[in-house]
Image (cartoon, rainbow, N blue to C red; front, side):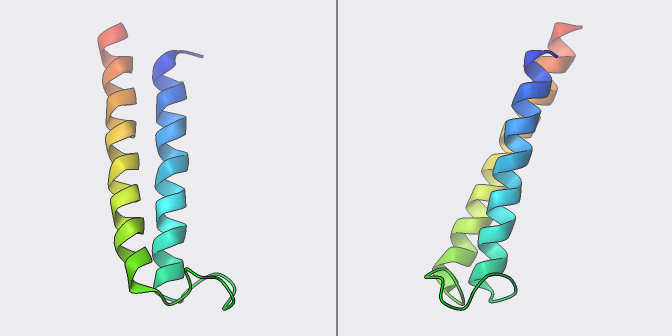
Length: 68
């Protein structure tokens, strides 16, 4: 498995964490006792983390393309 796949995997995990944080901030998932639950700040943080995940996935895809 090449570097590109590893970076894409890491980016995917980061994106999923951002999605979970965003949904917790919107009070859609997670326990109500969580400090993230229904907290608008975590909606913003989640979106920012998802964007970071997309950027990491893009870097991984670029590494895969450049390696060929």
